[in-house]
Image (cartoon, rainbow, N blue to C red):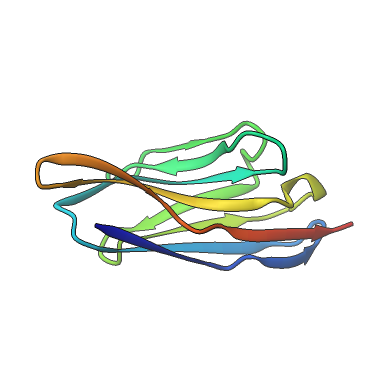
Length: 119
């Protein structure tokens, strides 16, 4: 089983920057796609950015050009650099990881980290 530890959320002024981190640890034959999702109260969780083990990335249109996802495969860690933050970015961010173990694919979620943006 893989566990995720998220960090980096907090309070920032509009236009500022934050960097989120998510480290995966535990039993896995391979860790595949890793990504960040976010969820506002009363709304569905939505994709922010995802990165494959080969470094291919995909972003939500709302964050393109402002957020950058990166990955350190040696550390099984992903980062989300968030620049030019807007009040609408102020929600809970969740790390998501897909991994292979004992011939089966699994998905695991982090506990969430809150980003607050003051206007």
